[in-house]
Image (tube, helix red, strand yellow):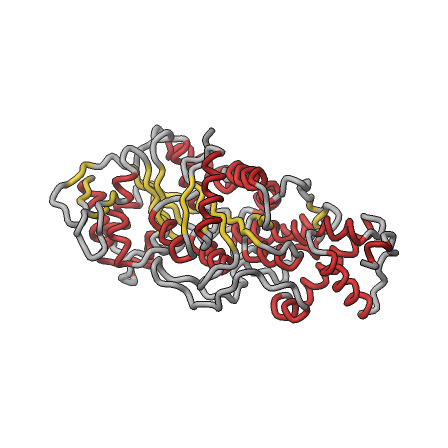
Length: 476
């Protein structure tokens, strides 16, 4: 049985025995798997090829799973990331979701739980690339994209970051004559200039130091299909000249080779910059701009197509829901708040805000306060980004397990609003269990000891805690 995706799952785990067990479990279920021993190796694999899902341990020597998550959200914001953690606490869950994780799984877990989680994430994988076009302007653009799909011309898609440029690129490919052929995407902003040329054109063994084997470039991998050059305006002028030649001659030559390969590739390029301004400023070649701008789509920001906001929010809720809990719904007041917000980060910011609210909401409904629109920032992370593959991030002290939740950790990792959300979640869960601490701890996914400690804190703050009904557990 296949995963339903042409792209593999990447497992990131520093313990070789556990990593082998995780990979064997997923492969036995018919899923394709790649593996990495640390965050830097994981980034190297993701830069080299597409993956459908990342499952990463949190505690690893050097860069942690949280560090990797932050870097991946900058590199591939649509890529689902699941974190494996040894402590199922409200704080860790909120922290992971705040950074952009799509799910987390608590150690120890059985093989079936891992398989079901992976399949659920792969099933949701289609969601980020589903075109939502409910606004009048979006419908017009979608109709134009449908017509462009019937041609084989190069397409340039422009718009602010997060407006859905890759979504439209996939939409065009999926409705073209190349729909069943490869779709290869490369983020030109995410790969260092000295590596980007080899990544695009490929190389022969011995072409440069470290080239121990021949490697096909992205153009070659996309033969017969579609190549997406994402954020092409981030490419240096020297490489722009080489890309122009490939587009003009329709042939590519690997580094270190004298043999040319005739190309049958449709190119779609995107940029979040105003390319005519970049040309005037001397940062982008005019001849390459005209070569790319055969057909063009300009995507307006979300604030200019408000008819898409609520449908996009509802899709985000469906994508982030865990199997054991139903999708929360937006209250009318929350929907009005979403419509009133300007969304400078566009659909990406909306998705992050709504999915985070889904984890903070109590009682199956998302209220305005859960959205926290006055303070939410999708880039709100103090963790420094990882650098290119092979260059480790600032090392952290190696640990073998996650530290237990403490008051000091809360003060350092959560602001007052998050502590209030946590308090509301604990009290609501206690009320739903009739005051049973034992059952509440199970539902919250924390230890009885942790819950008891938190209830003592609440009482010290003068907060009334629901009546205890399981006295035998309290005395333990």
